[in-house]
Image 1 (tube, rainbow, N blue to C red):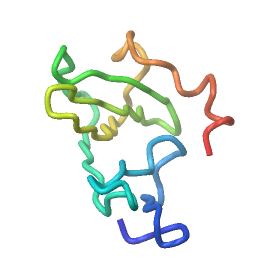
Image 2: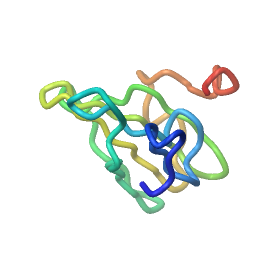
Image 3: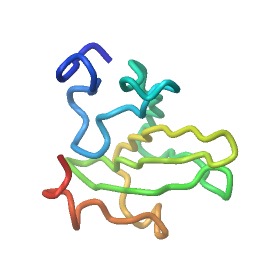
Image 4: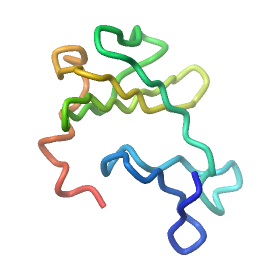
Length: 103
């Protein structure tokens, strides 16, 4: 991720709020400069289960953005699904309900 805010926070331009930031580095002094993305073409989607949990989901401009968390490894990723709908992630929070509140 080549864009930063105050040289501390890294963001991915083009992803919606809530899905564009990476998590903190292990030393907690800044955010990681990498964001793991899963890009899925229309008709395909990841398999979510107890080891890969969809936490937030947002439908926007023909894409479904999902913030996925892997609790076993304490890692997250952003899945971007072309043509996806919230029906794919019934247990995830609908980030569209609070999207305006996300900084």
